[in-house]
Length: 201
Image (cartoon, rainbow, N blue to C red; front, side):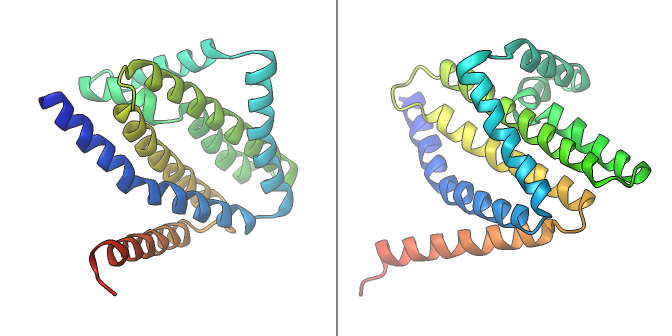
C-alpha cells in the first residue's frame, strides 16, 4: 500500500513537472536562437549526429559508464550523491563547457566555439539517452512513475545547468532571461489549468 501511494505521488509530481519540461525547453531554444547561427547549427548537429550514431551504428555505453565512474569518484565522500550525481550531472558536457570557456580566453577564432557547441550537445544527448534507458529499465511498474518523475527532474536540472554555463560563457545567451521565460510560461500554464479545473465560468 505504501509503495502504491509513493508511486501515485511520483506520478503526480511528474504531471506537475511536465509544464516545466516543456517551457524550459522552449526558453532554452529561444536562448539558442539568440546566438550566432553557426553556434546554434553546430549544437543542433551534435544532437542529430549522436542520435544517428546511437540508432544505426554504435551505442557508446562504455563511454557513458566511464563518465558515471568519474562522477562517483568525485562525490565519493558523500554516499547519497554517489547514487544520484552520475545520473543527474552530464559530466562530459560540463567538461567541454569549461574547456570552451578557457579556450575563449586564449583563442580568438570563432570556429573553436562551433566545435565545442557540437561536443556539448553530442555528449548531453548521450547522457540523456543512456540515463533514460537505465532509469526505465530499473522501474518495473507498468506506468513507470519512478522513471517519469526522475527523468523529468533530471532533464529540468540538466537544461538549467546548460543554460547557466552557456550564460557564463556566451554574451548572447542570458541565463536570467532563460529563467524568467521558463517561470513566466510555467506560471501561465499552471494558472490556466487551475482556472479551467477549479474556477467555474
